[in-house]
Amino acid sequence: MANFFPFGLLSLSLSLLLLLPFSNAASPFLGKVNVLTQSNFDAVLSQSEDDVPMWLLDFYAPWCGHCKRLAPVLEELVLETDKMAVGTIDATSNRKLADKFKVKGFPTLIFHRNGVTEPYKGSRSKGALVDFAERMAGPPVAEVESMGTFVKGRGVAFVLKGGAGEDLEAEFFKVASEMQHEEQFGRFKGKGSPEICLVEQSEEPYCVPAVDKKQIQGFVKGNNYNVVTELSAETFSKMVNIPDIKLAVGVVKPGSDNDGTTKVIEEMRALGRSIRQDADLQGKFAFVYIDGERYADWVKGFDKIDMDGLPTVFVFDNKGGSYFLNGENWPLVQFLKSVDSGAVEKIKYDKASGKSSGFGALYDLFMENMPWSLLVLLPFAALIGLLIAVIFEDVGESGESPPSADASAAKTEDAPAAPEQTDESKKDK
Image (cartoon, rainbow, N blue to C red; front, side, top):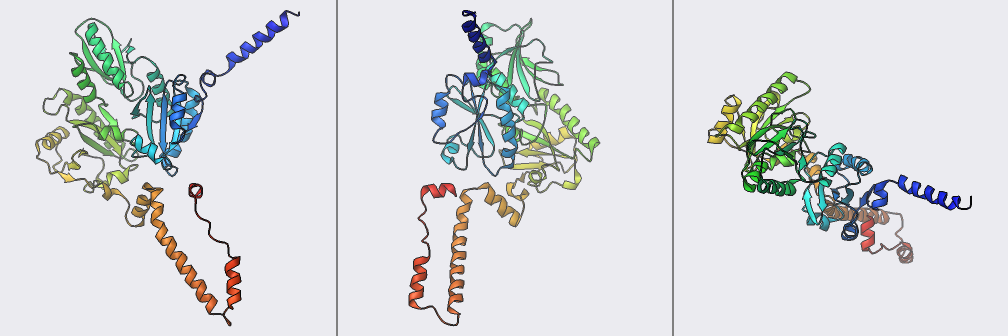
């Protein structure tokens, strides 16, 4: 009995240790949302190098609605994966850190791994973020058993198919390593000539002969989007910034005109497939659709669009700051060819015209530039203070008997002096 007790106690202790969550045992930065600032950022990332595979950095603003909706998603995310730590940074009070990472909007998600940082461009749903963490923790190229079931979510994947040699496989691996944060990459071994294939759910794979790294990289970057993409807050930045591509934008009303919406989307889907083989249009247009009611403010920025005539399709050239309307009601393919040839009038895109006017526009401008916009209020505050002082002075002078010199002196001594504003008091405010 005397020998059994220590052994039993040791066994019990080991069992309890095994029951502890792996993430908490591995690193103090996993399993929770970490608050990062300019003062602790470098130290935290340095301390976590050995036990944190990757960081997801969330730059937010306290007044940002999208940021507030993302916060509970991140709280749930850290409990779902031990492959990625999460840190949040208030960009309004950590401007130098935000500028370092070139933050221009909120929320901005950036992943950090092995000293390398890249913007996260995927969906902000918990499931998508968990999948992202798992994908980044795995090898850049996954073995593919079935082309039809390889893709997860609404994104796309690139698969090297056929009897590729070692040199070509190495080139494909290099491209996958550089772009793993953007899309999935896989290797489907088999007979036949090597091909690089674009794969997405509910679509037939689009394959072309694989030649070398430059050709593979060009194919991946030139086809890094779906046949048709729903334009939303999550996909907007990626789609409007595709190099040398114009967007064919379908503006639809899903709730009130399902037949018209379906027709527009399916027409774009069919053309999106066919222009991959069209020498005139290949690589010139991508197809997206947007809910014209939900994102009416953005659509109204294209002030020539008839919001009562939805659904409709127009072409947006973000790089050129212009858009094109199908005033002739051409079939979609003819409209795109006419835009490409210069036969359609180019209309200047005014980003400001879709914003609210009057006080609404001033409010939007004020909120977009917080907290620096508070400085604008200082002259008004000073003016109001001066007016109040003048009013009270007039009230004092209008009494039945003016205050004596002694009374005035006593009043001045009793009044508390305004404290000098220190850096700490500014921070509190």
